[in-house]
Length: 206
Image (cartoon, rainbow, N blue to C red; front, side):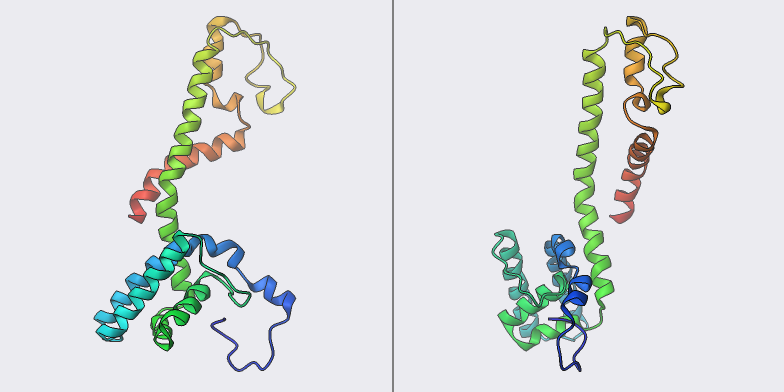
């Protein structure tokens, strides 16, 4: 299903459909989309858009969809343009026409922003663990190679400034602590930026 094109008498050109469809990318936001819709249903109930029976039906339907995503039994169909329309289509199959009222007062842009925000909040702790794992690896390499000698090599342009003379056991450990000798500068910059911004981003989104 789509949220547009109600007056069209023919289907969209297949190539245009493939270009426009975002489902291969945004289906990873499935759980977050259902979570956001459950919260939005509660807001519509408070605004008297839903009555109690309609809200209960939508809650039950969304919980069923969440369980289907959790068990990987949710079935996408060719007409699903994105994760939002897939969830709305399935909700309509489960509870009928009242499912369409869930779209009241919000746009697809609202859903995208909300879903992505929730997804980031879930992913940031995982990214934090990955970065900690990388840091642990660098520490272990440093400790295990503390007595390793290495000769200088200016063949790598980004290392030429640092590798001007042979390294002795006394200088090997400080050298291995230098992340800019292990990774190219752009990678070091990216890792440093992530390390600085990650706590701030997480705190802001919460």
